[in-house]
Amino acid sequence: MGTVAGAFSGLFGVGGGTVIVPMLIAFYAYGDRLATGTSLAAIIVIALLATAMQGGFYGNVDVDIGLTLAVPAILGVVAGTAIQQRIPEKAVSFLFALILIGVAIQMVVG
Amino acid sequence: MDIALACLVCFVGGIVAGLIGVGGGVVFVPAMTIILSKGQVEAESTSLLMIALVSVIGTWRQIGYGNVNLKDAALIGLLSPVGVLIGVVVANAVPERALRIGFAALALYMAWRLLKRVFKKEDPPPTEAEAAVPAER
Image (tube, rainbow over all chains, first blue to last red; front, side, top):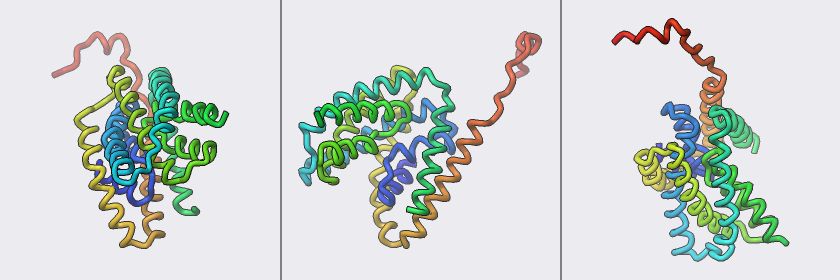
């Protein structure tokens, strides 16, 4: 599944999580929260490899801006994971279904 | 002022990342290109650094909530780069229109599976009498 998720990233530039979460839920019977948590953990590996490539080889990473903006983003992810524990679990599936329909429309008419 | 606005937008991006398990790049990149006037490549590259940090903290929180399968995550993460290479090769070999329609069909199929799951009726809770009888082995 990692290969499939990566292939979609290479093909269409969609982020890993957009493919990983719905695939884990739809095809591997993951619960919504377990799927999102596992997706975040998988993204660590993907993002670190990509950052090393872009920063190490091409010098395209603005470390100062990245670290500055990462502070509120980290506060946000702490809040987001906490909120997720308090909403109905299937809300994530519903949200992703809407996102996927939007992506499908964009793919055909875009 | 611009940096304050970008921070606010990235905070929202972090919430989205934690809520639905994505990296948040879809929010971080426009925060840098539109608000901070960064170039697209630099913004995308810098967002990767942010995604790495956000996903580390997000994973740490989700481990605390018992929501991470580390073995599967490692497998997915390590196999993804192989997929990216395959995706790039396929993208250069197959007509773009066919790829787009194929991906749209897969996205709609996944959406249908998710919606079916969302609206599936739950089994009713056992009655007191049923709950009192131990299940047969």
